[in-house]
Image (cartoon, rainbow, N blue to C red; front, side):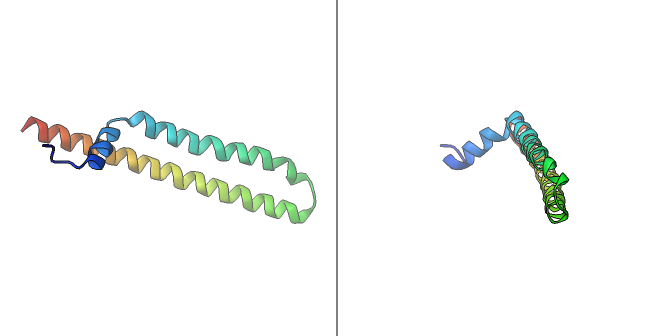
Length: 91
C-alpha cells in the first residue's frame, strides 16, 4: 500500500515534469504580449482611448510579471519535492 493518496500520487508524478511548468510560463508571456500587440493600434485614436489602452497595457504587463513569478516559484517547489523524494528513496 502506498503512503500517498491517489491525488497526492498524481501531483507527485506531475512534480517530476518541469517542462509542463516551463511551457505554462512561456504561454503566460506569449498570450498577453499578443493582446498588447492587438491593442497598440488603438493608441493613435482620441485621448480617452489612449488612457484606456495605456492602462490595459500596464495591467497586462503586471499580469505577466505576476504569472512568471508564480511559475518560477512553482518550479522551485517542484525541485524541492524532487530532492525530498530522492533523499527519502535513498534512505
